[in-house]
Length: 131
Image (cartoon, rainbow, N blue to C red; front, side):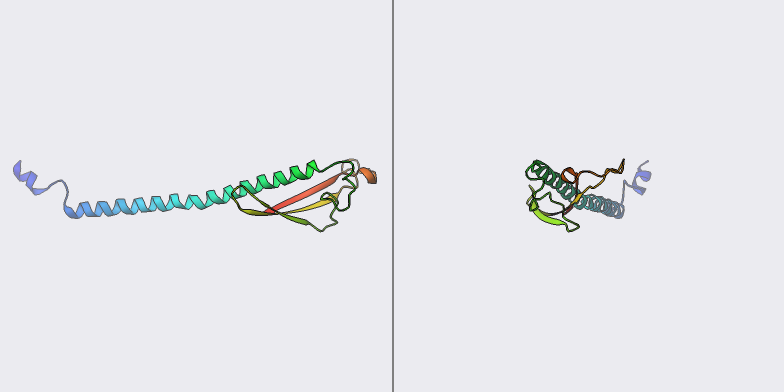
């Protein structure tokens, strides 16, 4: 029995070193994979903040709709005639976003094809935001 135990021990020094190297390489691979997740998370945070900033901008425009401002040619909701308007806003994170919007007057009801009266035509606002 003593002869068997002396022939083969638990592990040789070389086996321990090789096993340690394998574990270190596996750990480095896992950490590299996990660290790649962070930039994507940051980008989605910026995208979400940009969406909230655009929504807030739309709410501000909505609150400016009044009977006396509807036909104000210098107002923010006057149809742009194909020329987009641009404004910048700063988010809670301190990042600056550029909001581009275009106001289009709807001349006819898309369902019936009937024309809207000129003084009460609805307007569509198309918004894009750069982040």
